[in-house]
Length: 92
Length: 404
Image (tube, rainbow over all chains, first blue to last red; front, side, top):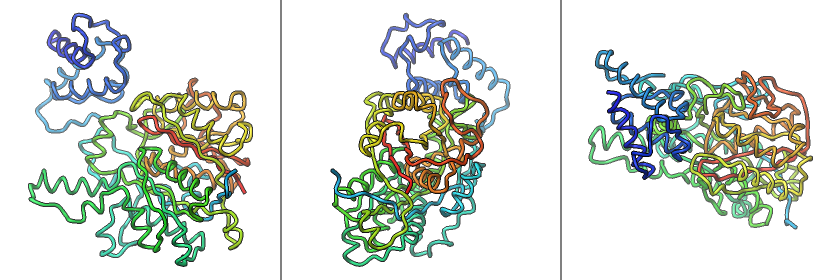
């Protein structure tokens, strides 16, 4: 699962910033990748769509590196797999 | 030299702290926030649940059913504030005065609830048509048009939409039109009713709405709190106001505007600083003349630290002498109405000699190291104050006000 989340995050950043996926690693800093706050919001939006989950605001605001995003998505995916199916996506 | 001095002879407000100026000032001068759970929209599917709503608002208290059919909530608020402002100015609208009066309003979002309702009809209920009143209710200039029709005002009427700076831009334009003698009188301000489900979801996606409350300049701030309401001011050529023996609440002495040319959501301190500097220059004021600033102070990480830098750029060492507060901590961020509601808060502060606090303050943020009047109102007076508005998209508008 880790690889697929990492691949997706890298693919989305590469597409958004028009850079080669090879230049993006787990340790890549978002600022170095020239991701500004709106790029970050769009990335979160696309990840929520792809993985059908909701990223809490405080987590979204704390992302500084690619690895932090991957870890959070993995946490939310595994949390979701433990929960019974439900329409509610309220994490406030 | 400007042709005329411009005084404020009428004030009207409806917002979460109160449905008229006296209720509003009572709450602000006590430092009492009016933020709580949203009642008008089902928040089950939202990450935030709180806003600064006009609680217990009932349309029928203010409008009959025939009138209300044409009025979105944002126009209703605007008309209520206009009625109070015009009454407080004790104006009698003769045909001559009506021709020489302008109406300049601001709104960022227009009739959000009406738009939501129309789209629910179309997309969800699969209805083949929407109400024919949808467009007249939704359009941002609905308030300006309704004020014109209600009071038979036939001078220039227009609406500005510059997100969170809308009302300050509107008041600034009205100010210049009166100052230059294009009109003798202006009904100006802003109104907003942004609490529709669709719009709240859009704000949720921005990830800048606080899950609890609004804590401007505090290091534990988590974002803004949306608010609704309206503020209307009557601006008048000073000679005319004196000649008719009008009560004068304050004087509008300067207006500055600038744009950041930088980013849609990230503020640039230099842009905000330039608009404050231009407001000072426009009013012929030195930085040291200012005693109080009603800050834009949204409670977001980005605004409050950027505004601090901007204030320090303009005021230098005098920045440490300034009393500064964000009344958004009490009435929320009313977007296109914010400038008007906060200009009214500023005028009432000068008039009463009480600076309202920045409420909900927990502990200082080293990046916001100004005197932000934490939590408790302060008895103090000064002659001049600024009221700041800085919009998404980097559009800045600042008013300079004088106590009289």
